[in-house]
Amino acid sequence: MTAPAPLRFIEMDSPSIAAWSGRLAVIVDEDGRLDAGARRVNAASRQAVARAAASDAFGKLKPGEALEIGWPGGLAARGILVLKLGRKPGVEAARAAGAALARMRGKDPLLLVAGAHKAAGEIAFGLVLRGYGFDVHKTGDAPADPAQISVMVTNPEAVAREAGDQAAVAEGVFFTRDLVNEPANVLTTDDFAARLAAMQELGLEVTILDEEELATLGMRLLLSVGHGSASPSKVVVMEWKGGGEASPLALVGKGVVFDTGGISLKPAAGMEAMTMDMGGAGVVAGVMRTLALRKARANVVGLVGLVENMPSDRATRPGDVVRSMKGDTVEIINTDAEGRLVLADVLWYAQETYRPAGIVDLATLTGAMLVALGHEKAGVFANDDGLAEAFLKAAAAEGEGAWRMPLAPAYDRLLKSRIADMKNVGGRWAGSITAAQFLQRFVKEGTPWVHLDIAGVASRDDAGPLSPPGATGWGVMALNRLVADRYEA
Image (cartoon, rainbow, N blue to C red):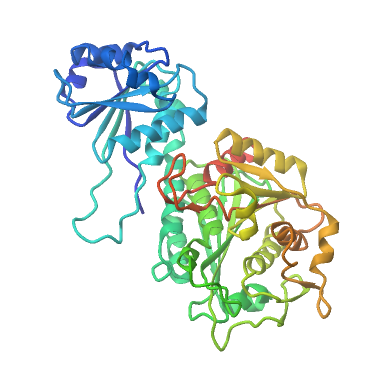
C-alpha cells in the first residue's frame, strides 16, 4: 500500500531552520504581515521573506497560493515556499493551501515553519493528502519512501493532539486510491478479497463468501453479473465492533473490478477507465481501515460485492429474467446496468444478517450522474431526511462535494416490466434517479438509507483539490466523520 508521508510536529528552533536542507515553507498573512515563524526564517535568510512578501508577485497570489525563493542566502534549504494565507482560514481553505505546498515541494523533505498559526494541523493534513502518488507499475529505480514533512509550531503536543486521527484517515484515503488506481489484471476479485482479508491484522473481522455460498443465499442478481467472467464473484464482509451492543451502521459498496458492459458492450473509447468501477467498494474498504486504525467507538459493517462484468458464452443476456435474494424478479434490459444488481442483493443480505441502524451504499453507478453534477459533487439519494442531512453536514465539513437528489414514486413507472416484477433500467431520462428507485426496492421499510452515486467523484482526469489525477478517495473523510458524529459512543 502507498504510505502517507511521515508527519511530525516539532518545537520552534532557529538552528534547525538554518540547517534544513530540503525546502522550507512559511505562512504570510494576506496583507504581507509575517508571523513569528516567518520572522525567524526571514532573519535567517537575510530578509528574503520580507522582500518576497512586499513584491508584486506576492500581491498577485490568491489566498492559498505560494511563491518560491530559490537557494536563499544564509540557509541550507534549496528554497523557501512563501504561502499567502490568512490567520483563520476555514478547514477546506487550509487543506487546499497545504496541497499547494505539496505540489511545489516535489519529492523534497519539507519543513513548514507555522509558529502559532491556528490552521497548522489542517495545512499539514492537506500536504499529506496531496503528496500521494501511484507509481508501483513504473519501471526503473525503486520508488523512494515519501519524504518527511515536519511542522514547526509553538506548541507541538497540542497541535499533534488536534491533528489526532488524521493519520488514520490519510491511510484510509490512500488505501482507497490504491484500489481504484490498480489495473484490473492486478486487482482481480481474488486479489481484492485478499487485500481486504489482510485487514484482519488491524482488528477487523473479515468474512469472504464464495460463489457456492452466494448461490445458497440466493444472490442470483449479483452472480448474474459475473457469469461471463473467469474471475469468481465474491462478497466480502468487514466488521468493526467498537460500540458495544448497538446495531451497526452498514456500508455497502459496488465492486465491479472491470466493466465491459457485458453483452451490452461499451464503446471501446474510454473503456480503460472502467478499472475504477469498483470505486464504491474501494471507499468502503478505506473507511473500514480508518475506523480500525483509529479504534472508533462504533459498530460498523462494510459489505462489498466483487464481480467482473465480461461478455462470453456464459454471460447474462439482455432479456434474461433473474430472481433476487429478496425474491423479486428482474428483467435484464441492459447488462451494462450491472452495479444496481450487485448492490440489490448485498443490500438485502446486509439487512437480513445485521439489522443495521442505517445503510449507506456507494457506487460508480450512472453516467447520468456525471452529466448532472460533473466531477465536483456526488449525488445523494435517501429515504431518511435525518441520515441524509447528517451525511451532507459531514461531507461539507470535510470539503467533499455532495448534492441531494430527488426520489419519487412517479419514477417507478419507468421500471415496469411486461414479464417480471421490474426492469433494471428505466430508459434515457432521469437515469440516476431510476437507478436509485431500483435500489430503494431492496431497502426494508423503516431502515434509514442513503445511496451515494460517486460516478463523477471517484476518479478524475485532472487533479482534484487534494489529489493528483486519478483516484480521489472521495467519501472516506465524510463517512469517517459521519460515524464519529452520529454513531460513536
